[in-house]
Amino acid sequence: MKKKALIPVFVFASGRGSNFEALCQAVHAGKLNADIRALVSNTDGCGATEIARMFKVPVIAVSHKGCGREQHEKKILEALPQAERPWIVLAGYMRLLTKEFIERFWDSELGVSRIVNIHPSLLPAFPGTSGYRQALEYGVKVTGATVHLVTTGLDDGPVVLQRSFEVRDDDTLEALLKRGLAVEHELYSEALYKLFNHSWRLSRGSEGAGRPRVVFGGEA
Ligand code: GRF
Image 1 (spheres, helix red, strand yellow):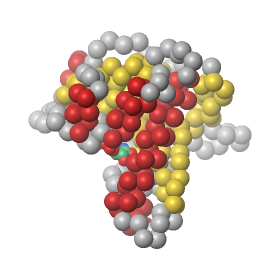
Image 2 (tube, rainbow, N blue to C red):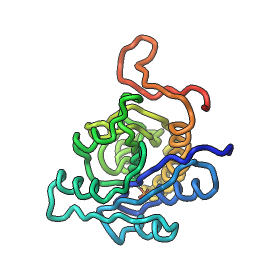
Image 3 (tube, helix red, strand yellow):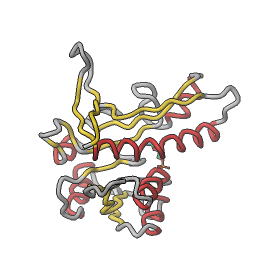
């Protein structure tokens, strides 16, 4: 990778943290020009916080217990160190964000928030939790993962990248999850690399109809 500016990033995670770990590895391998300033977690002691400690990423642990959404986010915002145009990268963060929080990271130049999420399905199929379980239960033959920019809707917002893979006839949830996560781990750093280093815009397609998606131009 050519020497590129490091983009300040705060990763938010609540659980296992395998996507966070993959991002840390991509950064270490020089494949992603991100400066992961901190891991924000509402569940101290979860897999993600352990991984942060392994990679020497500062942990900002803010429990959501006993406080409302606004109050929880206020505490997080107070704890976040100053950064210039940071990206918020959600990696298994099990909390819905308020409109106010999303607006806080609104980028008027981009026309969208600098908040990005990864979801375990080909959105708009199977929003909500357990995308792979839903795919298996529905009986689809193909599923996938989606990286999208975050809006106030649940698993909504302009699609950045998607990748599909087959559901095998004999798949168990465990097998599907394993293949799905492997896809996610590549897709997330690829999507972030493109967001950080390519020119891009939101486009509703040639007819101007439908919902906006991220359309990439060349690498800057
Ligand atoms: C992933 O499946 C991701 O798509 C979803 O939550 C899960 C997090 O897994 N948003 P992990 O904590 O990164 O292993």
